[in-house]
Image 1 (cartoon, rainbow over the protein chains, first blue to last red):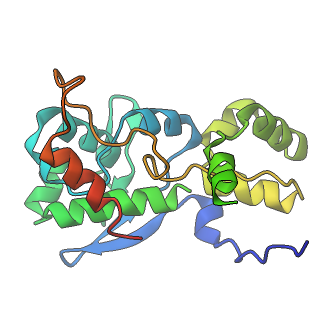
Image 2: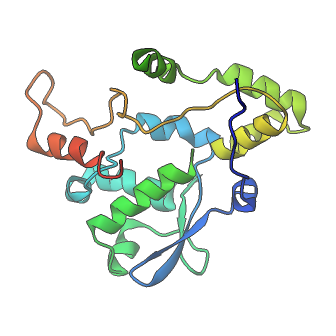
Length: 113
Length: 93
């Protein structure tokens, strides 16, 4: 049985600093979900596809806000160029559309393993 | 063969085993483990020579629930938005 050749793990993975993503000409940092939050994310039944429904539905918007900027004492996973957590209102003001929101969700899942 | 692979992929990770191996191999506290991410945990396990694969996967890719539940629609035919959500999950494949 041959050993699976694994790609080297980037430093950004080990430091947990996340990755940059450019949306509407602005830089955002998306961080991977911590283990403590994985169960919550998996049971939240997040819509990972077209975000049209998510933006239209108040409960879905709350869920998106939870994973963008956090909720209560739970931290979020998307930060602006100044290192501040964003929320749905802010990113919409920055010009995000539903495709950009889907991009964020997919990037969050990719980074989180 | 594919059925077996899919069945294997459906098995949830054994987090008790994963925590035990991480605590064994590192000086991390119990609480610190939860603050790590899945890729970090996987990298540490790989570096420690532990043959443990953490497959989180994309919810719904192998039949698990992923589409948002619509209240009051139990036992009713799926809505068009649910079909669209499911179809869009395959955009990236």
